[in-house]
Length: 58
Image 1: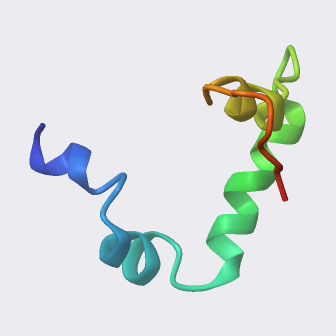
Image 2 (image 1 turned 180 degrees about the vertical axis):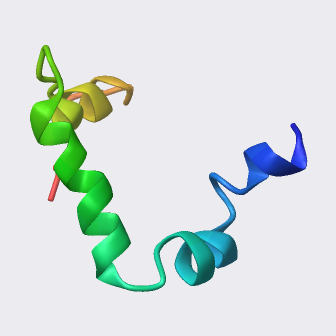
């Protein structure tokens, strides 16, 4: 993985450079309200897990 790709997952970079305040994160979140077709991100994320039947999601 390139150094640039690591910036997308590096916690220190994300919290100090990309999103040091809530404003940048809010701006990123807001662009998804215009996505066509809308994507159910929560449903997609839950579909990625292997469920055995006894789990609970908070």
